[in-house]
Length: 114
Ligand SMILES: [Zn+2]
Image 1 (tube, helix red, strand yellow):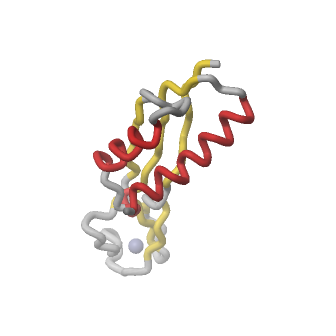
Image 2 (image 1 turned 90 degrees about the vertical axis):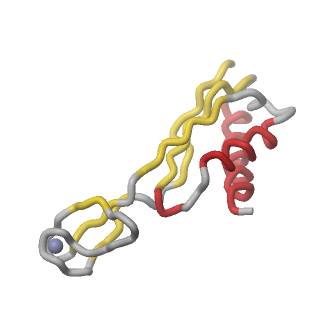
């Protein structure tokens, strides 16, 4: 399961932070998730809850912030929102587009109690 693997790596990050900062309790975890990662927020939240049991993150709130998929045209440098994976520049019509946002998946911040 894709989401379970994500939560697994998420907890590796959390564990490292807990050890580093001697955190006693995690209250909130804020995640940035790009549109291209095709993560289902409901599933991710459910996996997170299961994983958090009996850890410092038990009962913590998982906040998922979706990052829209953005492309940048190589021809005219226009940055635009990509809908339905249509990588065609709306300004000049070419398809030479770099993805500039939408692939992220990381912990933006942790709200903790020490
Ligand atoms: Zn263009």
